[in-house]
Length: 283
Image (cartoon, rainbow, N blue to C red; front, side):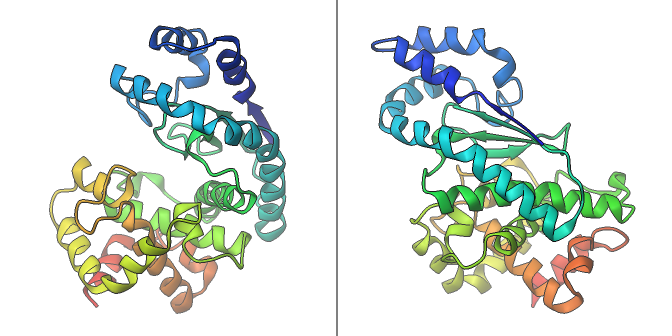
C-alpha cells in the first residue's frame, strides 16, 4: 500500500498567499499538474466559474482540510488491514490525497482499478464519516478483485450503463457496511450526518423509485440519467441526488440474502446481472 498525501502542498499555497486570486489558483494547478491529471476534467470540470466558486468556499473548509490531512492516512491503513483480514486478497493499493475544486469527493481511477483518489475539500472531517467513505472506495477495488479472482471476463461488462453502476455502487456500499458496521444507515450513503431525509425519501418512495429507474434503464442510458441517479448534481426527480446508491445497495443486500455473499459479489461473472436487476425492479 502506498499513500501520497498532497494536501500539504495545497496548504502551503493557501497559507503563503494573503488573498488568493483566480490567477493564483490557476498558477497553482498548472504548477502541480501531475496531482490533478486524473481529476480534471473527468471528475471535475476545470472552468473559470468552478475555480471562482472554489475560492469562495475554501476558507470555510480549511480547518477540516488540516484535520483530514492528519487523520485520513491512518484511517486508510486501518481500513486496508480490515479488508485484508476479511477477504485476504493481497491488494496493493495506491491512495492519492488532494484538495480539489469541489467536484467528486473520491473515486477509483478508470485506467488503474487499484488507485484511489480523495478530494478532501468535499469530505466531512468526522472520523466515522472518513472511515465509511474509505471503506466504500476500497470496496470498489475489492469488488473488482473478487470478480477477477473468479475469472471475470471484463469485456462482457457494459460500463456505460446505469444498471452496471447500480450494481457496483450497491456492492461498494454493502462492503462499507461490512467493514464499518454499526453506524446510522444514512452515513453509508452521504458520508455525513445530514442524510436522514435522503434515506427516508427512498423508503417512502421505493416503489416509485424502482419504477422510474426501470423506465430510465429500458431506454438509452445517457449522462443526464447518470447524473440524476449517481452524481452529486442529480436530484431532479425526487429532490435528492444519488438515490441510485440506495437502490443499488437494496438490490445487492437482497442478492446476498438470496445466494450468499461471495456469489452475490461475483454475480456478474457468468450471469446476466442487468437482466436480474431488471427483474428485481419489476417486483
